[in-house]
Image (cartoon, rainbow, N blue to C red):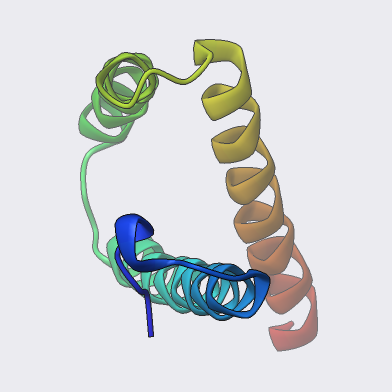
Length: 97
C-alpha cells in the first residue's frame, strides 16, 4: 500500500510505500514490454515506426519536465528499457530459427 506522504510517521510506513511503488514500476515495465511486443508483431510501415521513435524521445523530455526530473536521467532509463526489450527480441529471434 502506498500511504500518503503526510501520513507516513515512521520508517516502516516509508519502506512499505517505497516497496509498493517499486513493485508497481516492475509491473508496469512488464506491461509495457507486452505492448511493445504486440506492436512489433503488427505489420506497420517502417516510416511510421521511425516517426513513433522520434515522438517517444520528445515525450520523454516532456515527461521529465512534467515531473521535475532531469531529462537525461529519464531518457537514459528509457534507453535501457528499450535496449533490454530489443535484446530480448534478438535472442528470441535466434531461438526461433
